[in-house]
Length: 453
Image 1 (cartoon, helix red, strand yellow):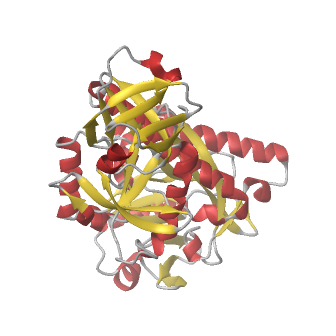
Image 2: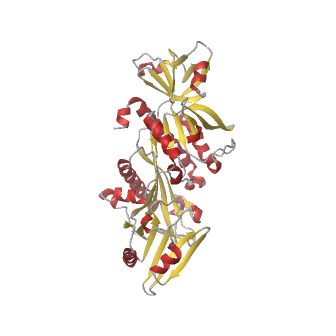
Image 3: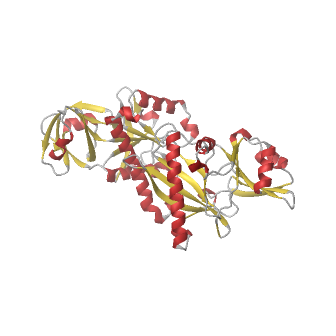
């Protein structure tokens, strides 16, 4: 991680920038320009013996809309880049300064708090907050005094946190992304939502990742569902673009009774129904849904606690060198009668220490889940277009200690971090998201041809 510097205003000469003498060796060029985000200004530079500080004239502060505080610096050719400036892109703004992004305001406030420790500048913005004529944004920042809206330049890098696929497909969102990437050369990371079938097809050809995949097919016929049910006795029907466990059906076949059962979530309730045939299930429960939007997947016999199935959320993040790390692992125990382990469906979050009494068993689970998550992260990163900074995996461990992948999330939820023992992991994962933004910023400045090759 690069050192950060305290930024202080000076009322000396106009367009004056005073840098620490310790960074003079980082460039052989004569610095004539200071840059913050996409805003730039000519400047006069001096080097002085400063103790971890940068001094900048008031007129430059005002012109660049540069907030005081901690900053990093990048010297490249004739320019000094301060920041970098990170824009967190989302939608759903309310217009209220108390909760500008509604129920997700706290979610974003935590990211903006994490920036301070990293010595970066970050703000939250949406499509409607950009002034394309000036290249500035009316972005939202957060500090000890709460939320503030301020005019600030377009960023060096964009962290995509759009809330859902519907919003992402909106014309205005696509236009913003296209213009920032093509007209300004701004890298944009975590674009798009993963499609379950695309991820499955990506991982299946490789032995090192295929081993984690349950048998899965897209748009199954009645005959294929019947065949897989007779083989495994239980299967799942999952929407290929679903989230939060919504629209998931677990089908169970009892051969002795020749009866079918189905578990699913309906509004606030977990439902279990019995059918004499698959036709009855499709008529009364599956309804008007389209099978072409669904995956059929074998049910894995997962480890259980108190008769309830357990799976694991594993977060991976890239760091300031673009390398993946596992930042958090938590167990999720299904609620009674629930088809999934999602917290909204009654699931409970536990740490590995709470789940496994035996240290050897706990360590083995940690090693297996960590290894799988890193292997899967690398392969997905290689196969998906764009820059990926984080992935949330839903993994399972079966009764034979094998690891299975159920889903990979490009914009993972953070419900596991509500657990009091995962506060450090919560902060660490947020910091790494910002450190990866720093990595992309530096690459875009110093080696843009490498970044986009």
